[in-house]
Length: 155
Image (cartoon, rainbow, N blue to C red; front, side):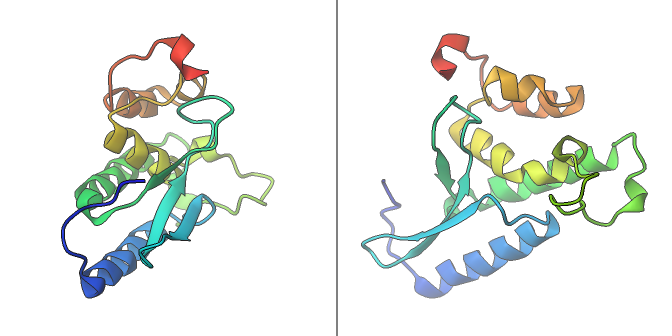
């Protein structure tokens, strides 16, 4: 795994982590987040995006300070999509718990920050089966992340 070559500033890095956690809290996001400490001793967060870009594949994207603007824009765009939902979005301030029998992640675009961030960083669309299961408005946002993909490369 490659890491930025600029000098490491511990204070700035930990401020980034705090800011990132605050932003993800707005998305009620915690289940697909992974933390790792590499040989350099630095705590590095990742989004787990298994089976989204390639079928039957473990996959993660590191969340780095250099992509802070991408994460913020993904957040903004998903909240905009959320505000356009046709079902009564005013009923809930936050998505219900995944344990709630009424929970359907397709009803909650704000929960897709991991995939949108990753797609924009990689400049790659998610694989077709994942994309085709989303609303037309959400598909449009993800299709803008990169060129059309050959289905054979998706696994």
